[in-house]
Image (cartoon, rainbow, N blue to C red):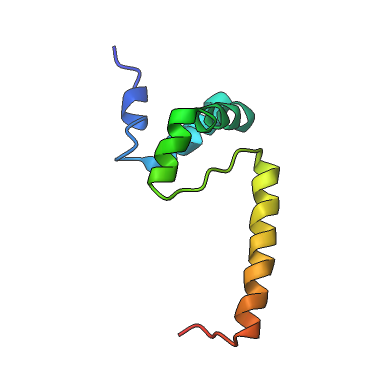
Length: 86
């Protein structure tokens, strides 16, 4: 008998549903901890650098703070340069 879980876990077919399922099952803290552990791996750091990615290891609140700071910083640049959306 099939539980039907495998069809929900097909990321290519249901990326949003899969993300919600993982967060519900593991809890955001556990998922965050696991992702941070992977990102701390030296081989992952090297590969991400090769791909031009910057790694951010932290907690959801840390990321929220970073987003707020970056939004404020770039909003000032946009206003100073009088950049308008087309």
